[in-house]
Each structure stands twice: as C-alpha cells, then as structure tokens.
Length: 484
Image 1 (cartoon, rainbow, N blue to C red):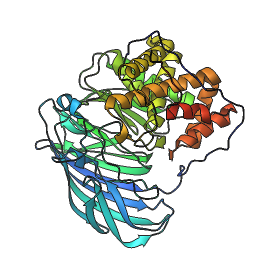
Image 2 (image 1 turned 45 degrees about the horizontal axis):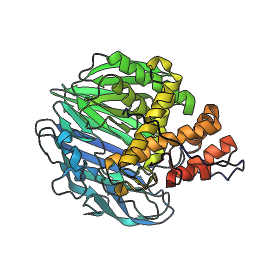
Image 3 (image 1 turned 45 degrees about the vertical axis):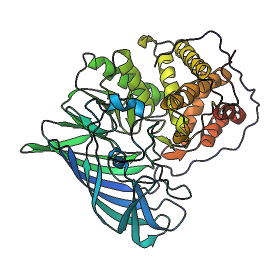
Image 4 (image 1 turned 90 degrees about the vertical axis):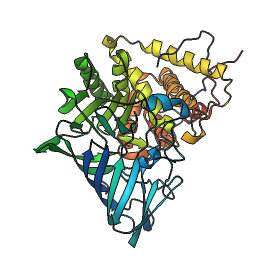
C-alpha cells in the first residue's frame, strides 16, 4: 500500500562489529524422509461441498516416540460458533459481501487409529496410533471427510464462479517439543507447516478449470472432469476452481500460468510473474518446481502465497496487480522454500517478501517504481502510525494473537521489516546483502528456519557481527521515529 511521507523522521541505527558468530544450522533438509499425502476430492458446485479422501503416509520427523499424531483442521475456523474466526470484525463486510456464511469440515471416519477432535477450538484431529512409531518410522492414516464451503472472499470458500481450496485438508501439526495446535488467527497467516509430498485429484464440473501448482492432467468423463497433479517437497497444496481464461509463458524451463476472469492487461501481469520469478531465481537461487500458477480469484486481501500457486485478489487494480504478483512470487522463497513459523515469527517471511519486492523494482526500472520512493513511503507510514497511535511497543517478534490489530501487525512485520533490510543494505551494500539472503535460502531450503538462522547466514556472508543490529529492530530498541 502507498503511504503518506513525513519529513520529520529519523533512524537511530546500531553500530556493527566485525566478529563472526557461529552458524546456526537448519534441520529437515531436502532428501530427508517426509510425509506424503494422496488426496482424492469431488467438488459439488451446486451445494458447494467437497467430498474427499486423504491418505497420509506419515513420517515421524521428531526425535521422540509418538503414540498419536495431530492434524490441523483449518476449515473448522469457518464454522458457525468458531472461537477463532478467519477475519476480524472490521473485515466482515468486505469478506462476506453477500452476508455471513458458514462452512466447515466433517470427519466421516479415520483408518489407522482411533480419533478424537480437540485443540483450542475443536480444530485439531488427534489420531491415536495402534502402535507407537519411533523417529523416522511411518504410519498409514486415511481420513474420509466432507467440506462445506462458505460464501467468503478468503483462502477457503467461494464467490460467484470461483472456489478457493486453500488449507483444505487435514495437515500435520509441526512438532516443537509438542504438537503445535495454534488456532486460526485472523491476523496474518496462522501457519507452521512442514515440507511434504502431494498427489491430488480433483473432480468438478467440466466447465470449471482447476488451477494447480504443478503440471496437471485433465480427463473428462461426461459432465465431469478430473484434474490431477503431483507436487513434491512442498510446504502445502492449494487449488482454485473457476471459469478462467489463461495466458502462459516460461522462465528457465518453468511453465508460468496466469489464470484470470477479467483482466484487460493479462499479458502485462503474466510478464510481472515471469520477470519476478526470473529475478528472484537469479538473486536467491533457482526456483525448484516445474510450474508456477498465478490465479486471479475472490480474495479479501491483496494476495496469498502457497507453494507453486498464489492468489491475486480480483479487487486489485492497475499497478497493484503487478505488485501483488511480485510480492507473492517472493514468497516462493520466503515461506515456500525457506519456511518459518508464521505464528511466532511472522516478520521472518513477510519482511523479506516486502523488501524483495522493493529490490525487484530497483533492479527492474521499466516498472516505473523507485526504490527510494518505496522506502520513504514505508518510513513515513510507519512514523505516522506510531505518532498518531502513540505506539510505545514496536517489537516485531510477537505471536499473531499478541498484535492489537491487523493494522499493527502490518506495520510491525511488513513495514518495519522492510526498513530493517533497507538499513542493513545501507550498512552492507546491496551485493553483500543479496549474497547473504542467497546463502540463507541455500542453507535453510526445505526447513522451518528460525531468526538465528537468518542472522547467522547474513553474518557468515558479510563477515560482520549483525545480531545486535537485527535484534534491535526485532525487539523494538531501535527507534525509527520521534514523537515531538
């Protein structure tokens, strides 16, 4: 978003020393055993339901014996009576343009163990295994379930002729000393997801196109069509159904597809997807998947990232469409390839995606957006927000549930995070900073990274001590504004 600039702003930056701290390594690298999901689903567009079977080859990636396995049931947040709702009260009107609508998930049965529904909001499927599994051992679990799609402009739901299937199946809870049962916060992206493999088949009326994150096959049978694809080493699996037009291109042998319903500049927006994919591949390391899908759909925010597929709101206009595409493409690295706990460390991916977008504009001047203008807008907007709100706590490292509002979340993760990277670039230089981020992407690929992993990679590349510098931004001791 564009923000008003203020003239009376200043930054108090911490000095950096020249010592190098030890590298903090990442876990769960590519090639290690991971869980595999085979999902067969049929979408009924008359009553907006989905009947699905999810077969899970679960791998114990913990260091302890497990007698039970926990899975998130994110669609439960959309049901009537949910304690944690998908949108804030302020967003209800725009998210539900046709009035509040409820959806949800119903578990018909589970094979592979007895089960119960638990969690903080009846949103966790707990499967009690007949036999405990040791680290690296596997368990076969099959979940038969039914989804009710809400009429909502969100990750999961429908409006008019588009159906969003984001976070739509039982997905294993990350294990961090215990299973992470974090609920579906309305702020930010409430996810902490491990890398898995997916084989998905979706059947729907044949007049619908199913946009998927990997090369797909489509087979028609009467009035129905089944679209199938396989996606390996992925953070998640999302699909969008719609009556789309499509334009396609390629970057370094990657197929890039733009699915849209109404866009008279579709080729221009396909170019933004291709250009940003190429720039980020050159800067941070090659995009590892065979295709990339950008989908214009009913969505209340600007966009949403999934591995190999992103949403772009059909409400976005003009240059904002390209900006959303560029930002969400950056998320293919910062969230997709390098994962993080988005509940505890939301800034870790969002700040990087936002700053990467600004770097893209700096290195692609034909887009007509100047680096200095974006940084000035960020500084002005952040200062104005803090001054008007008399904000005393500017810490970035908070759980999603600890932000007072979605506005505060945005300023402390996206905006302040971008200013932190701008300050780093002024200290290290663009070449060194980008090299450090490439090092981070390489060393932490296919893991759930921690803030210390990022800091260690930047220190290793720059040969500078940066922990105190970065920590000052994260904990709020660095002040980017003054209140007069």
